Image (cartoon, rainbow, N blue to C red; front, side):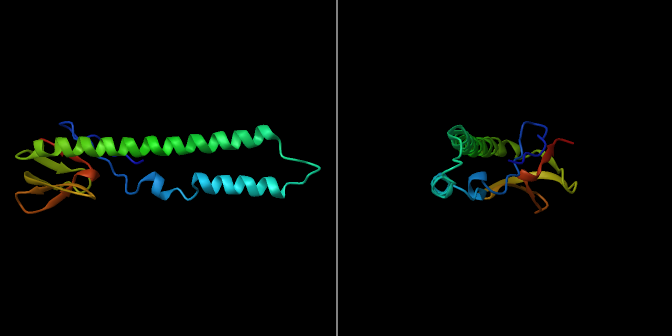
Length: 134
């Protein structure tokens, strides 16, 4: 999860472009198939230690739980942004990316994130980070 600086005035900016669970290429079922294949292919005279297999399984389980926690944290940050964004209307904001400054006319909330529409017509992506005030 990528997190950009917290803007003044309490609006946090989250720059997570993809959910970690979407970018994970190995799911639990694939892991079990791989583990089963490893057991079938092992040398009977030198079997893999059971504690190693259990450690691999526990490690994979921890990774899965961490991905779920990160997804929930991303959702919480997004919800927080959505709730705080309307308070920016009428405020002077500055982009932390290119320094664009202006007064917020309206807020646009889409599935890709929140944007501030300035009185000049310019659009600032809130996920890239903003500073509130002069």
